[in-house]
Image (cartoon, rainbow, N blue to C red; front, side, top):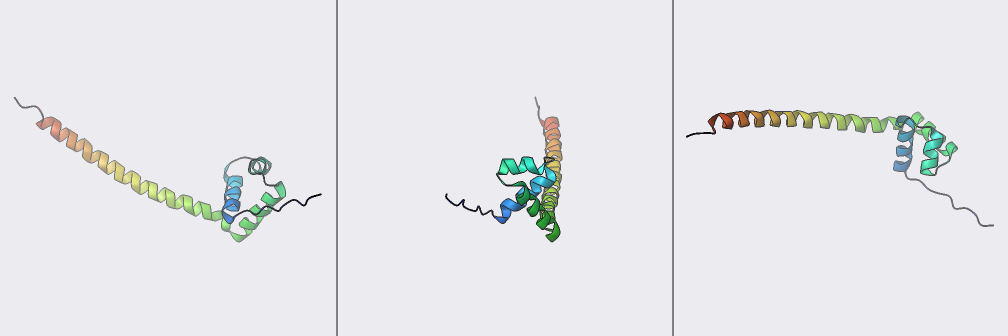
Length: 97
């Protein structure tokens, strides 16, 4: 009989798996099946990251992305308003006999 090799997962993979557990609305078993990771392994990762407080890190990333997108949205609204005013200005001045 041959000995089965032990798989090694990166921290990023583990964090993403925990994030999926917390946010996807799917069961740990479903996620484990999709990722090819055992139920007990995923449960252990979830417990470890919850205890360490590391599972909140992706939420910080989401908050930062939300702030960035809101700023971008404000800039785009300003640009749209400027373009509307320019179109109105040029439409009034446009046709001359």
